[in-house]
Image 1: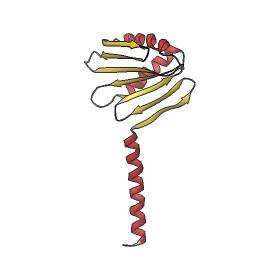
Image 2: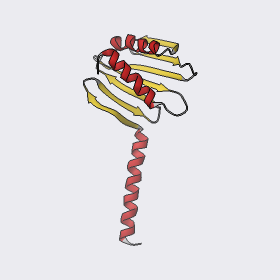
Image 3: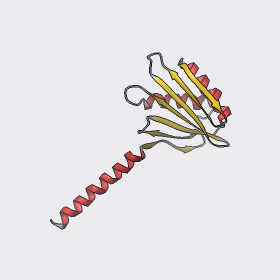
Image 4: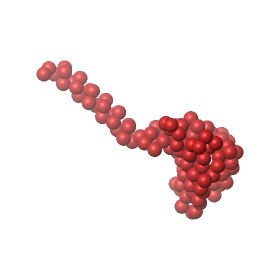
Length: 138
């Protein structure tokens, strides 16, 4: 084997390693951190998560209001001091899951997962955009 061939093979392995680590981590940033929060999309779970600079007590009623405005049928909802969940159903019988988890005294992570054929990232982004607007975090 020539040194040139080994160098190309090492380069290819490095590239594959980087791709593998990216897939293993399974997240991509949606928006850089700003005063309105930051978002990431998980390819492993299909959830679009956004960290909002508000408490769980502030974001919970806004999330419920947005779910109702979208005319989603709420199948189950639960909230306590450790977090909250909403399981809802769209008119086309697609499930939508919401999970709210406090990450600090003044910040809450909201994950939206739409269980349609393939992950519906754009629809989840739309929900987060509407929620940010409702919260005054444009």
